[in-house]
Length: 160
Image (cartoon, rainbow, N blue to C red; front, side, top):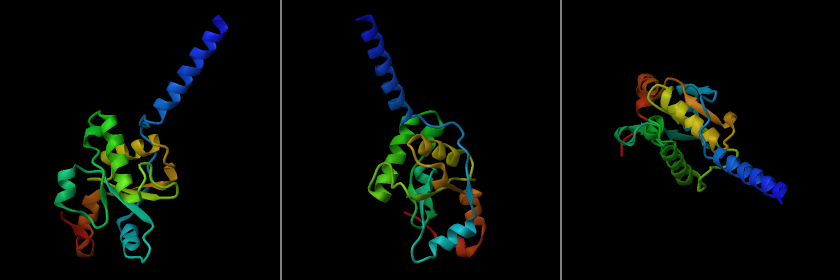
């Protein structure tokens, strides 16, 4: 009987550990970058390849974001509220793809202020959700680089 209880306890702990892992952000997942020029070229194609998720604060997204992007505010997650990060990411993916986890082959571009902290948190959340790291890209230099690339780029920034 003791062996049975011990095995049952180990099984329950294992299940709980794997369940928690699926909702735990990774820690500093490697990031890969896409240049503003490559993203702009994709936006101009007849069949865009990338889903663009904007990691910036919702108010900044509303003030101006790349046409076609979806907001996935990572501010609370960056400040320690991982649950809010997962919830925001799931909402953004559901809005864009119809699924809270996105589609397996979806190529995602994360946009933040400078291509660093907010995009890193978004990458960590996505990896924690099971998205393949190879499917996650960060806009190099963030929205600052996009807006600094010239009129052809700023013409693709829209306000809500």
